Image (tube, rainbow, N blue to C red; front, side, top):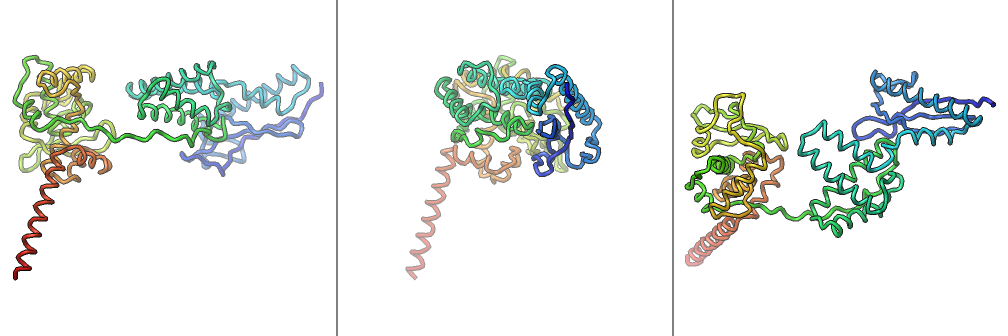
Length: 403
């Protein structure tokens, strides 16, 4: 058995720094004068890389790199012992095959979903798991248990889109979420040098339909105000819906409202200042007297407990649904309609849209402008104002001409 020449050299490509500021650490393997590069699966910033020593200044990542390089040497020795001869292509193939998790779409996606299960909010994890389940159903429909990233092309993405729309009958927004999940997995594979580019990047998303705002009319809101419920749970739902309609708080913001979020200014006017749980954007809303009255019925002193004793989201939504049916408002009333009701009520009272945006915690005023499109009363009022203005101009012109 003749001993071949062998060397390994870890390095980073400083010309290919990713959006997060890191670059992949690669390993150049040379056997008998022929070289090949392979990803180590580790990244670092150019500042963390010690080119002279071929090391990372981060101890944890440097340990991972040392383990990888040791494994390369072990694989080289094993192949040489088993075959008596070795090429750089043989060694690279063995090293690429050692980790199938990173090379196959579903296996890789399962790993990401598991990370969400342990690291993110439960609702986020459930969404990711559902999108992964749809992707798995599509791959299985192709008579495959899994598919390698390198075998995915643009046609795969187009067929997946058709599968979601035609075979599963999914709505456009659902299709877009599933495509976003697939694209995320593809871009992560690019970041890890599993593939060179995302082959489905140019596949178009479905056109987003104009959001359908569900709110209750002022008359229905007055009916809700004047109709207390005998059932304790439904009455809590009624009060919270009214409170949210006067403050713009979503269900999760109502549930996580604590006494310290409620303050009072020098004039004795109470207000809520809090960050939206969904976006982290701060909102500020003065309290309507009715909202203050509702608050006085619940916890406003013990900051170890929330203001309202709300249960699970599904329970309050069921209670609001019941409330809508009992009052004859809607058989599909949901809690989020209260937030939309706030936007419409404020707009109808001629509150400036910038102020509404601040109270609702909208980071972008375009989100608030949607409410200008959902109320016939607002359109009617605007038209009445226009007609009145034209009439005033006409009368003014007639007087001028008469002179």
